[in-house]
Amino acid sequence: MSLEISTITGVNSVRTRRVNGLRIQDIDNLHKFVKVLFAYSQEKITASQEDIATPEIAVSWKHLEEMAHRVHNQSDVEMGLLIGLNIPSAIQPHLRQRK
Image (cartoon, rainbow, N blue to C red):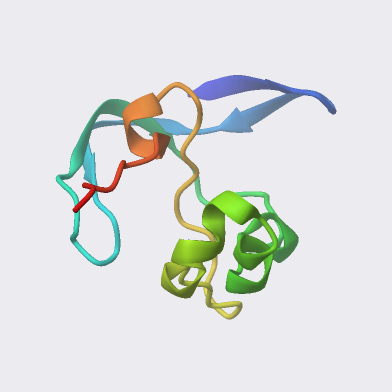
């Protein structure tokens, strides 16, 4: 299957296949998993290491300082999953309970 992707840099067509019933969860298993009805899979994700958050980047943002130590970045690992705005439940912030 061919999928047309539009970004700010232009339109691109990629070979892909549809994956149904995906569930994703944070690496520390601190939150309930998010169900993704379907996603698109491709052999290689075209993104660079500069696109991946690091603890150093997180501490430079006031609202992320507190959780910077939990950002897991391994530069020798290929990117395996991109989560877009079409799955807001996977990227929405989790509010802490006040004591």
